[in-house]
Length: 266
Ligand SMILES: Nc1ncnc2c1ncn2[C@@H]1O[C@H](COP(=O)(O)OP(=O)(O)OP(=O)(O)O)[C@@H](O)[C@H]1O
Image (tube, rainbow, N blue to C red):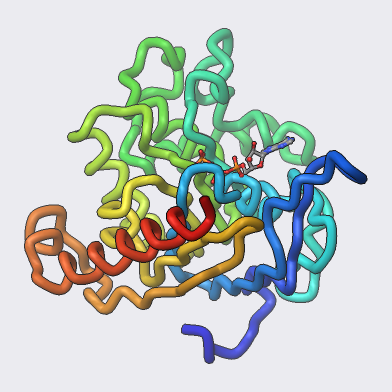
């Protein structure tokens, strides 16, 4: 999709570098990294542990500023959190407030806007419907299973009507069955709402299953070492897609690249 014309909804990273610390303590994590996420695209990001995947996602979200280079959403620089870009982190336990009902948790980010409480609640209920959790608005997060709580965290991102959803290891804290359901939910949201989704994951099978493209980070400091088009069609199925010989080929390719970059960065 790289040749698709740029639009106001394209998330663009240009020659971005990110270091932590400075002077003798400078730690260069990402260097000269460029990436585009087109509207409606599902991009997964993989790489060895410590490569800088979370750092990249934080730069995409505006939570962390790049040291050099640019992150922009269309023509708008991402120099802080934008309403158009929602973020979901791995640990739903830390991100949901236990003293608030599910509805209030989902509606919380809308509070700063000039939206009446009734409309905020309606938006929250709609977002809960879209993650297949109707009727749980009056419950508290701790009354729900881990998978359901992560759905609530995703609903909170969707309540903004953000066209871009960034997720950092979003399904790592739930059991295998809930993980498959959440993966399919993410694919379904992309199709139904036409949003762009970026997922950072350690799980290579998950990266191939979800992605239209898998971006492999590697090296020290990290760059994009490859971008792999996942030519498995848009309709994915947990059993049929994963059983395809092409799925196995793509998984082997990603795994080999990660292993090679891990060895060469030692
Ligand atoms: N706030 C910070 N201050 C200083 N160093 C940091 C900070 N955040 C991350 N780092 C360092 O930057 C490097 C990349 O970390 P990051 O979490 O982005 O990698 P990752 O690929 O997501 O790792 P993992 O796969 O283990 O989750 C690591 O060496 C980490 O210690």
